[in-house]
Length: 321
Image (cartoon, rainbow, N blue to C red; front, side, top):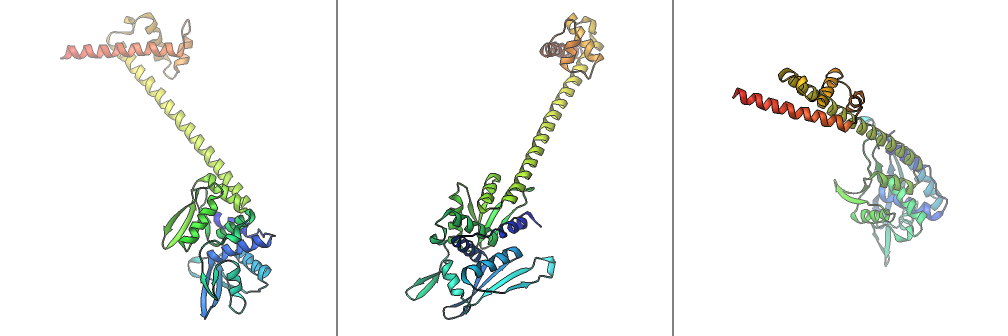
């Protein structure tokens, strides 16, 4: 199973005890994954479908507990491309679909008439527990989360601009930075930063998924730190090797032209050590001298020899010209 499917399975096993939280969660589930079928004057059938069997059980149980309606769960099998099965529940008008739609705030009555609303009903999210329940239901109904090994991205796919705005504002009440983007006729509320994805998982109660994501984040950080250290050490080693090669070339050039014996004693000593111990570091070369000198002192003498080599090269060029 994908990380997103595992997260939904975890959330689907959370059953709120409070009536208000059950209603808020069911309202979000219906809003995100429900459809209406007009069957007559002011008569609608409510169809709710999901690919997650645990989510289907939760919807079935909420409808039974809140409205004493027993509905059948139908399974539509997808034989093509090995896609997941769809679990569908149908609540007809005669079974009480209008009551459910009214209670979850999808129907709004106007003088013996009604209209379909797309905002999140304020009455359903007056408490913090109900806000968390609504977000949990919204994720179960139309949310997804990317595999954290690749990227940090959590989103809710909605069908209306009004609902997406309300959902974004509800998420941002928790000091998050959710945004909206339109994609293929849908409105997607998304969060991209790793810390904020962790926060929203904590808000909706996906604690196991949160710990799994944090473990992956720690592993990725450790891997990045190790790579950074290795790259830094490799760069320093390359720099040291290149400097050593350049120093040896300068000394060899001086040896072949004016001769090392023409150098001052302090430079001659370090030149002979560099030729004899080509892999030694500057610090190690300095400790071989009598008396020993520091790394900066060795580097100063090697730079002096580089200057001498450049002067000899320039002089030899003038002679040729």
